[in-house]
Length: 296
Image (cartoon, rainbow, N blue to C red; front, side, top):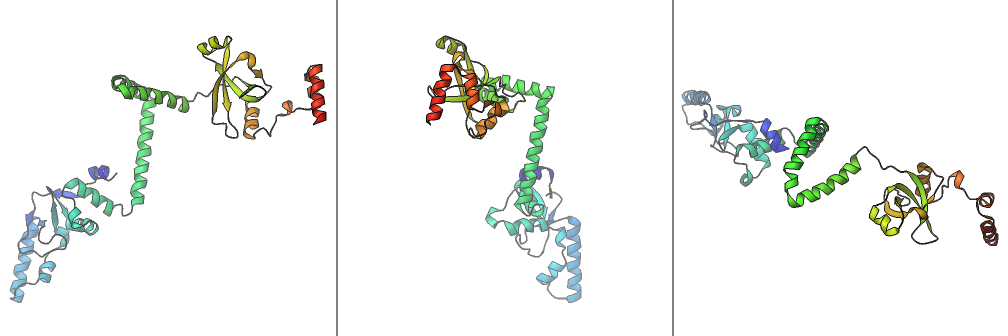
């Protein structure tokens, strides 16, 4: 951030055109190592001559200070010079051994001290500029020229890097899936026995499974997303034979409510009662179920 600001805000002046000041006063942090403009030098020497004529005594350090305006003093830093007041701000903050010796580093420190006395404003501006840059790049990518630039970059540069192209391709597929507007298409809510026979698990059919899996199973299979409770944002992708899948009379929203509540919120049409069991089970199954319910 400071480096970027130093490219646009430059407080330095060219060292050419500045001259040394004969018999000048010693200044804090730079002593006699400073420069002035030729006209300032001439004015300063004229004031010294006037003071000598008046007092007829050697001039004191205080008198020489009074004859010079610090606003007209410049301190050399590399090939340029900075006004003494600005040099003083940086010199008071940085130890003498760490003082920058060129224009850009000194300008960076001067900007941070003079315009951003605390780190918070500088950090805030850096974050805002970063967000603005990301927004502009995003807008460029969404238009036709942005797509063309990205495509050329991928085909001419990324595709020629052996390791990078593999990693980039995989990451791009994941990010395109996560951040695209296309959502997972849930076709229906089903149940199947998992992780073993007799234990039923709820899942969402997302599509047809892979052909190699169907060949190995000897029948068509479906891809099922099994979300976890109570956080359905994660889960498992499974391939299950169609003959082992039971379609449920549930909407996707009702299924999510059931999963998030860990099975507490059962939709009204799926609530199990004796009358409903008797109506839907076969006679022999219904009698066995009623005996189990009564015995429990």
